[in-house]
Length: 179
Image 1: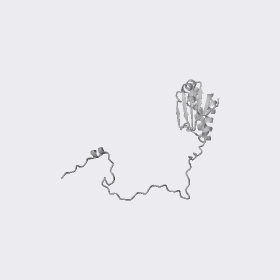
Image 2 (image 1 turned 45 degrees about the vertical axis):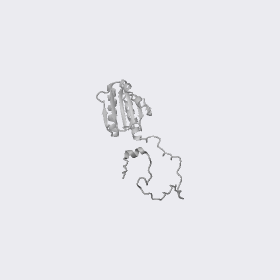
Image 3 (image 1 turned 135 degrees about the vertical axis):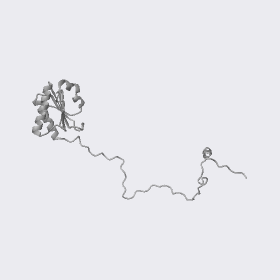
Image 4 (image 1 turned 180 degrees about the vertical axis):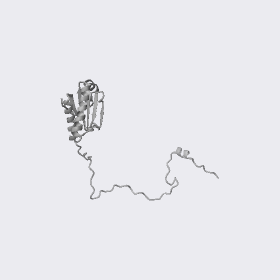
């Protein structure tokens, strides 16, 4: 009697022949599977639109902040009272996360820049009751920063302002020149 050798999996793969379910050891059921068909739409069903829905209307820009705008113009006027030159108010709403308005001004000497900063600090504190959240540079008078939250004021010596060129940095911001 001759014994049949079983094929290993590598030998089966080499043969490349596809086996029917019966050849794989499965018993055919004799039932045919139904063909797939598309369901008909129901009476209340709507056809999907081929065009995407229009996006909702977006506001034209960031909302106006009248309190911050008034404070920026007040700071600018207080700087003009101390003979500041090139006073500029930049509207950076939507461009900067830390402020809505930036006020830039120049002075002829470090004493004038310090006097401008002191005038703004005293008048805003006494008239509006506002304290700056931060100040920098009051000791040297080269570049003084006054941070009132929604409004930031940069007071420079003329040469320092030209060197740092903050107007160029905020070239896209709407501006209002006050002097």
